[in-house]
Image (spheres, rainbow, N blue to C red):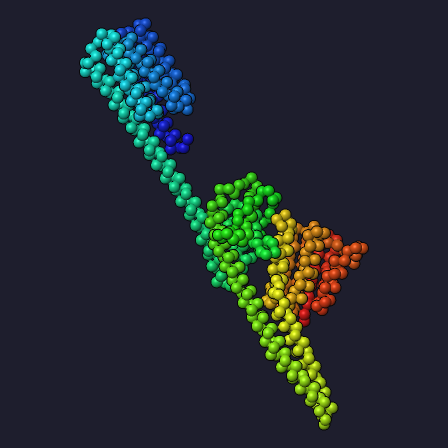
Length: 503
């Protein structure tokens, strides 16, 4: 029962108690004062006292129960009429005691039962008066009967007003709680919008930063121990942001990131020990709305940019192949003819041969560039690193990606570098027992470096067990693009793999 209901019902209980004991005490005192201690005085006091004690000893939940309460009120009318009958009828000092059942019924059982109890008391008083040969239409009887009815009406209406006031108060409290919940959701959404606006103004609006901002803002409102933002792509899922150390799968709660019929991914949260996130679901979903829109815009812009870049690559490849390539071939033919012309001095011939070699190198570079432009666009090193983060999963080691990639490497170079990075990270997953892996470095087209560090059990790089060729394969791949792989590790000290290429 709410505190407001306990308050006014408890006050009515106190009033009932005061009325019961007061009317009972007055009846006993006046009957003794008027007639002295007689058998009827004793009997009336004992019967009325037993009823008062019974009502007071009855648990409040029983006393307020509709059926039990109605039976109690009727019993009170019978007891009061009995005491009135044996102590003088309409002149009985227990007339006030006869009013207590009507008060009780009107205050706790409602208008209908209150009126019925008052009518029963009034009718009973008339019957008692008639039985005792008293005048039933005299003013005292009529006034007393009307008093019982008026008391029942007044008390019942008071109860109705109090009940309605309580219901309005409860409705206001509920509305206030709903408003507070809406304000919390709006505050969460506003915080997310502010963060996204700051990221957009700083030209850093990308899935990783958006996911990190969402988890950071969510942590201010929702008490979770760990969380991660997972996006879907054509190759599977990618964890773009993570906060805390995820626990067991069965304790997490997943919140879909969906716009219309498109599912972008999900937000996974792990509650704090002994906690539950069910009550925070509306707030979480409200915060996810601007985040989902941001992801949608990012993916849309990337799709548009990818198509635009691919069209531009195709145009450049066509121009290089159809215009610059033939022009270089003609230039090379002209230089060849100049070398073979009679009268050319040895010094001039050497210079022309040097120019010819430069033209040949340039033509090969143009041919290689055309091949790269015609090649299907490849993922950047960062995207491939994020895919490795997704492979780690919720129960795997924490993978931190910190790569400054200014320009994506050529397709063949990117695939070889990604293969070396994948081999190093998977070795940390499967063999080193690492809890934390860090991938960092700088990439700028045909030059760059990557460092993959883990806190695993480490190993001796000079010890090469038979049947294990991972390290050899990494070095062979690096040799293809004239790069290098350096492995620094020792048992119990983790592993550091450094990949470098270009000048």
